[in-house]
Length: 104
Image 1 (cartoon, rainbow, N blue to C red):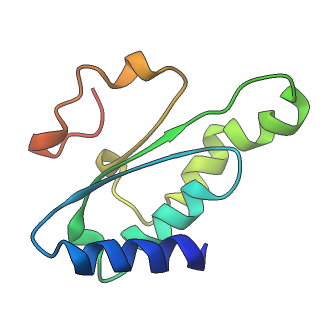
Image 2 (image 1 turned 135 degrees about the vertical axis):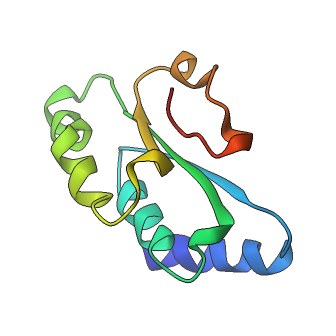
């Protein structure tokens, strides 16, 4: 998690006038890493966080990583309108990210 936070800090420093959209997946610790960034001094730099729920052959291993409970715990200190966990990319098509909306 620290690696992703440090990498983001580097990007934020390189582009001081930009906001970012963080996109990850449920396979490892992206939700937790991005939530830690969102609760840091860099939170104003993040427009939205999107986590794609991983599905595939390893259903038993993936199922606990895709639960609402996991995301609610990971993002407990993050405003609900700043993150979204999705199954299919089509779910993001009509989201107005520019205006700060991270959900439909």
